[in-house]
Image 1 (cartoon, rainbow, N blue to C red):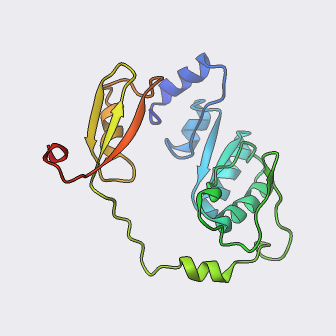
Image 2: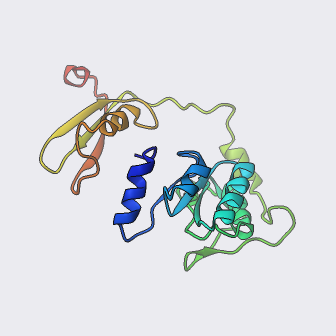
Amino acid sequence: RADDLHGNRLLREKMGTAIAHHYGSIPPNIAIRDGYCDGFVMAGGVSKVVNGGISCATANMPFFLQMVGTGLTTTMMRHLAAVLTHAQWPAITCHELYEHSLLTQRMDVVGGFAQVPEAPGLGIDIDEAALSKYRIDKADLSLPKRLVKVSRACGVNIYFADNSFSNGTLWNYFRTANQPIFEKGNYTTLIEDDGTQEFAD
């Protein structure tokens, strides 16, 4: 659990690999002071990321940048990565998952690195046609009625009625140690409402 300070410190002592947690999972000053992790995942807006990055530099702790979005967000993140000295671990952007980057030119990633644009501003050109095409007045964030099925390697299936983005009921169930989590061979399936009584039950 991310909020288990002593458990995470014990994991660090027993494991031979670095452990990262989201910056702010517990108060950062306590995380740094008590050896909660080896580094952080830094997410949020510019001010939050810059302030967290400065704290990490002061403590000499590396971090991942996690700023998920189109090419615009990724470009802003590239600029932040260039100036935050301890943004030393890979960045998480997911920009390739979008249908369009909203940029006029492709952002090349070579050997795990992307160049920081040097032109004025963000240094990129926005694709105005794409921006118009994908612009919406208000996003429909509703999800279809569904079940989340967790299939354990031992053959046990666990079903959750969960219509959230975070799979809240699933995480609450596993966090309270009802079943082992992340066993090798486990997988998750989303089951859409097919209108049958079996689904309703």
